[in-house]
Image (tube, rainbow, N blue to C red):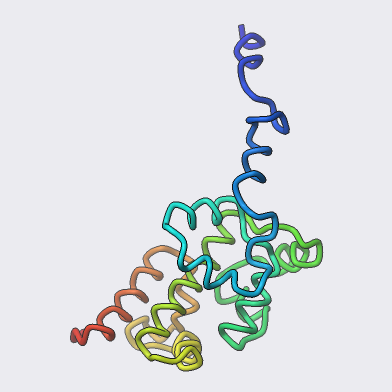
Length: 167
């Protein structure tokens, strides 16, 4: 009985299987090219979700650290609680990040965009993200983006600043 039910499923790698669908849905190296940050931030939410689920190109880690935040890759990985050896290996192999790794990087992109709107300057946004904040119990905003409640709190702080709402 088990054999007959497995025949009706698409095997991995077969047209219609999970592997085929994964690579057909998105560019092979999303996140590796100049302009990918802006393109991602202007996509519809469900398109962003698909890109995150498929995994950013691992080289996005270097670009986010250097180009957005002005920090070392190691500093970014530590802040986001990402395993250094795993991520560095993926960068070297030009591999993709996992869904959860990509989600953490996407949170950095979202927060940086909002902070840039609030501070009207991307350098000031990066500085704010890397400075301890009393409303985050002294943590840097970048350090609390590894989990949803931290991300929500950072967005709340920025939204209140943007709209002039007191703490």
